Structures are given as C-alpha cells and as structure tokens.
Image (cartoon, rainbow, N blue to C red; front, side, top):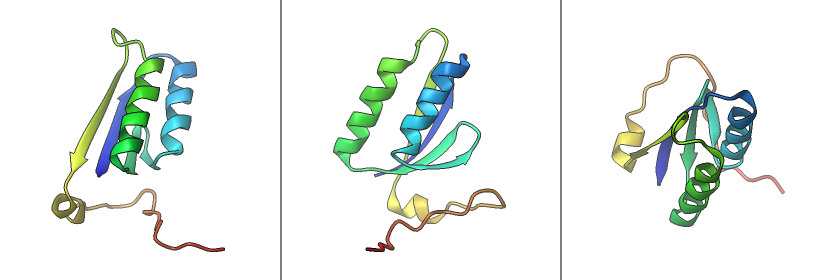
Length: 90
C-alpha cells in the first residue's frame, strides 16, 4: 500500500518526533510530506505510533492511499529524488 502522509503539528518537539517516526517508514519528500510504501501491518503500527503522539485538538495527520495505477501517475518537478528500495546491497 502506497501512502502520501502529510502532517501539521503545532509544537516543534512533537513535530520532530513525528518526523523521526515517519522517516523510519518512508521517504521525506517536502516539509511535512512523506511517501510511504507499507504493508497493512506497518500501516497499522505507524497509525498507532503517530496517534499516541499528537494532540488531536491542535495537530492533524492525513494518510492519502494511492493505488498502483495512481502511484504511476505521480509527477514530480524538483525536490527529493525517489529512493529505489528494490536495490539491496549485502
């Protein structure tokens, strides 16, 4: 499952924690935007970890699920290059 995850966190300390968690699940693309290719279990764990950190009345996190067809239609101009996780070096 491919997700675009965006967040708006009001406090710097919480924002840094959210960023660090997301970095372990996906690739940072822009300020407050990550792309994550996750299994269902990883997605559930990520949602659980993030939901425990935020203050719902002040913060928000959005998960946009993209199907394989839509994922191929993503256009990018500039910014971070997409990481190729299919290459493995031993």
